[in-house]
Length: 194
Image 1 (cartoon, rainbow, N blue to C red):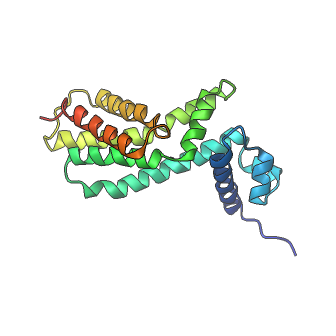
Image 2: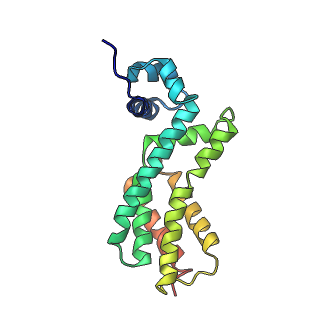
Image 3: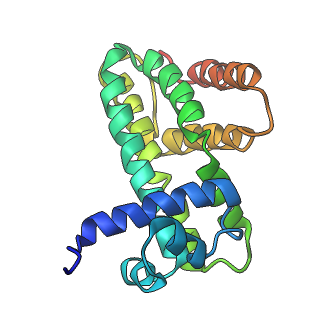
């Protein structure tokens, strides 16, 4: 009897197993053979659905950012003021970037052998949180809570500030880092609150 083949389900299983392996072994430590074995699909299936290992990781990272945006969109309405949203998004970033896949992303972008297209695609993933920050700043402007002259620059600066703190997600204890994320919002608010 011929096995029914569901392309979408196969792609999902391969991605899930690859994400687990990347989280455990890193990018360099995970081979397509490992992914094939763990997923139960041939290397041909892996390459059919994902041109190469880098493209597979990009797909996983894009899905993770889509989920990140959905979670934040569900949480954001719980905070009435733009300032409260900034404090909340700082904690949200800290909690939702504290994942082994972030280490894998850092491994890829710092490796000179990584395809420049892959590096660009990984850097483009920051658009998701940047849009969330911009929406908060826009909300603050609309309600008269914030005085911001350049929305793009403010968003860029805030995003890079949090991004710099994210570099320490695996080197500092949670409480210390949480205080730093919150303090960064307090300091930032000092420059934009009316």
